[in-house]
Amino acid sequence: MLKGKTITVIIPAYNEAPRISQVLSIVSNNSFLDRVIVVDDGSQDETSKVAANFPVEIIRLPQNRGKGWALVEGIRRAEDSDIYLFIDADLIYLREEHLLALLKPIVYRASVDMTVGIFRGGRKLSDLAQKFFPFLNGQRAVRGEWVRNLPDFSWTRFGVEVFLTCFAQKTASQVESIPLWGISHFHKEEKYGPFLGFYHRLKMYFEVARAYLWLEKKSKIVSKVVEKESDGYAQMQS
Image (cartoon, rainbow, N blue to C red; front, side, top):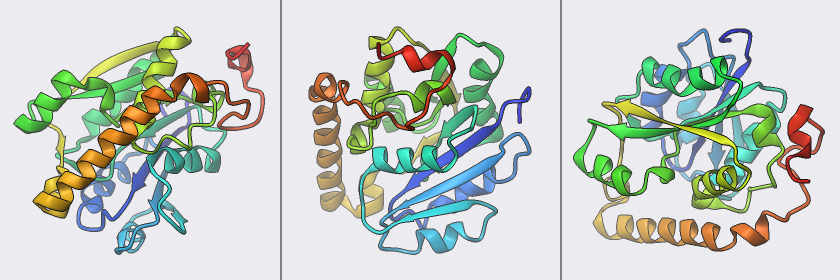
């Protein structure tokens, strides 16, 4: 806990067995984090087996449903958390200070609903992508009652960050960008090789574009991420 706030880390993971331990060694060793949930999104490797070596909860989906679905599953598992911290499973050089930087604005300032990490001083290619597309960063902290009252975004797949950012703008929610110095992640070409990696990159861009194009239609979804009233945010859709 920080200042009496319960904090749950949600880590969506798909075929991240070679990389996820670097992240779990950091997030599972901090007393201010109350729960760490790894959502194995239908992995075909030993992602869940590697995660089981750490003091974390594991949700194993029977098939790949996408990042948005995985995050929603994690939120529903811990539906009373004050704050959720979304962390990717393929990060490099993650440190405790990065987690605190994302959390503190929400913990100590009631007006902030979401923080978005921006990579700085890590790897040049990642930094360049962040310069032009900062809204695609998956390292975020979100206020619990805010995210639980959003329209169900399990359909978004890799477009989840676009959905969260655009919906925050639409509802005039306060979002703060947080520089995360020295951090980066593995590129898809490093994970899958140059050709298959390029295919996965194109697929990701397609899902991002689809989320943006479908935003207005999907924002009218009646069902919420968690179907229960939550303080003042329950009226956000009205």
